[in-house]
Length: 208
Image 1 (tube, rainbow, N blue to C red):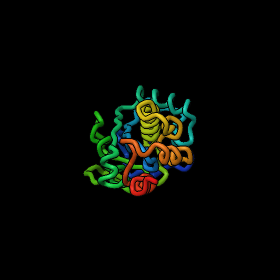
Image 2: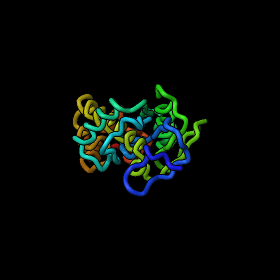
Image 3: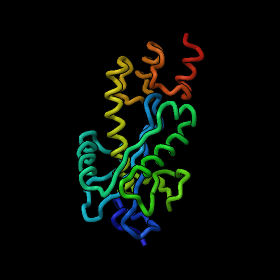
């Protein structure tokens, strides 16, 4: 029977777990050329629902910021974790993303009885778990996690823009836009650029 508190929008997701200690997990930042990959885990409180939860990519920045605060106030438990640029380069982005997810769940104050992970791959852990393709549009707890992760990462990229000016990090958040690629060619990679990603790797191999 589905956990109705975890359902988001039309087309209920049929979850195998019937209790309340359900964690949703999502990550942000797999595609950028710079910065950490950030993951979040959220256990929502069925008695304190949050209206407007949705895939963070489909929400305005203002709405994400508002929901970020509500999640912090109303969730039973939440945590944000990351895998560093060095870990991304060493492990690859998929395994670094899974590592960040695992860290987020392990840092929850209230340990979940069941975990729903966005996508089709899950970390190597002992939690009873399901993967949910497009889970950030189907499961409220995953949507909440996507919002926490995105707002956290976006804020960090704005701060990093001050430390590494000229790349436009505050605008594109590290994603491989044309402006970012041109800045990379002009300035060279910064310490927060991912050496294992092709545009950065190729630039380092042939700076000219």
